[in-house]
Length: 93
Image: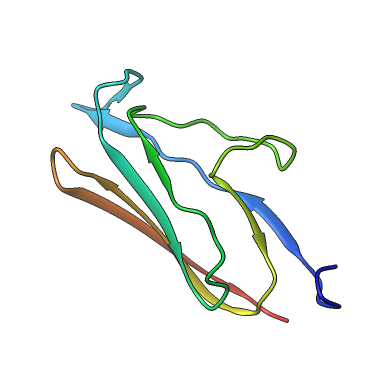
């Protein structure tokens, strides 16, 4: 609970591929952000081309604690190539 509201904890990750093969190096410039009604969500900037799953107990910026119902979009941009990936989900309160 946060301010009397339920809290949804979740994590996200990204994976870069070149020619169908996962890129697991630190040669990217990735910017990830979460857009939605709960504006307190952290953004992430990383050189890692692939970011693994994390737990709510780590300090990674890819962990979310959502306190507001609504529609959210996770947007991951690889800034060197300009490739953008998005996923949208809805939290019902």
